Length: 505
View 1 (tube, one colour):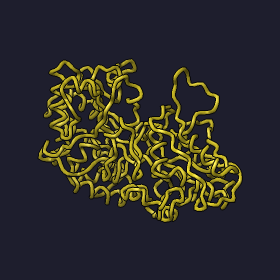
View 2 (cartoon, rainbow, N blue to C red):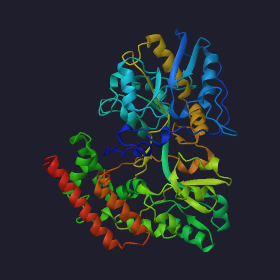
View 3 (tube, rainbow, N blue to C red):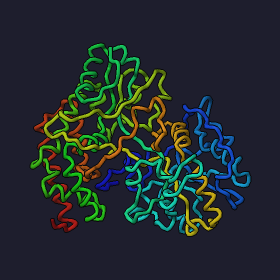
View 4 (cartoon, rainbow, N blue to C red):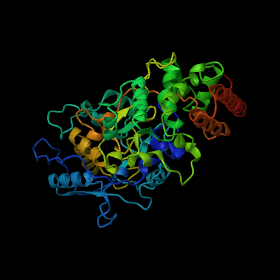
């Protein structure tokens, strides 16, 4: 699920190449933001000739089916339905119908490709930007290139001269495909970091979240001294490696990996094997590969030992999860992602903060910004428009109506409303603010991932590394032991790949 520029989003990590995972699951949330007022009809708004229905598959932002009872007190995601009603009042002859196929939230690129081949795609659809076009699973011919329209004014934003003006440059660079096309309107991002219990922080005399790794460790120590469990989540190498491991390898390796990704046709395993062959990702030759493990251990030494002893890849089904202990108010912090709706599920005030600055923690810690290496702008607010080849009902007039609908929801205030209604990500258009509880998770652009040692996962070596990782953090193995085990696992896996695939470096 690996590219050298960016590791695939956490949403995709769970199920591999289908790129559908955590964020594909139906989670309903109450809206923390006020419903935006409907814009008045003015002469500057598009004059649409289309009369009829626009179908839309909206993934996690899909409104609940009318009449479905989700149980007493179960909140619903309703923002897109509210906006669809507002759009209908502006254009009484156009209806937005949300699409609930039998596959529900777990629509895969393979399913969409099949639908596109039969000309049966919804008019507007969700999909990861990376899954469409060159190197993606869905042909670019199935979706309109929206780039030309990003260069034109959005009529629903007063005074706007180019729609792309509300989109950060790093976002446009990220979602632009190798052929220069942009197939989706991307308005949200997910991030990994820490959620914290404000009451427990206050009880320990901690006034604000830490900004450096040293402060984070000191806060954990202070919490424990006050009889408070600092944290209890299971250490997840899948998240810590891209955030810290890539930082320790540094900008030079990140830049080289990005070039190699193109050279090796985005084959992450071959990129990793080459970097290993050159010594960059070879622990025996480059101590930076594992140098972040002792830094992380300084924090996890204060975590609940019963949790850190669990291998995340094979934890028992009846395990008391660290997130459960946090939600119950038993621990002060949890390392997790924006998709977990702690602010809604907890009965105490929740704050959040990204992984603090790790520079100075080791001679190998670099200035490389790895935000986006785990997470990034690949989430639920990624909507494209089907071409006539993928959607036989698509006409020029219908396309203009679908485009107007995307322009309508693609404003800063509507981006903020939709994303904060779901509370599973943070809005990223200029001027849009995340929900208060998510404010510390605001996405920091510029993250670059390298492919290290992700290529080992899914192999016997990957299982060994997972076990060694938790064993070291839990104190069952010394650093010398894990180094020896890691080096052996690396050498065995890469030697096997190089021989099997006849790679010559």
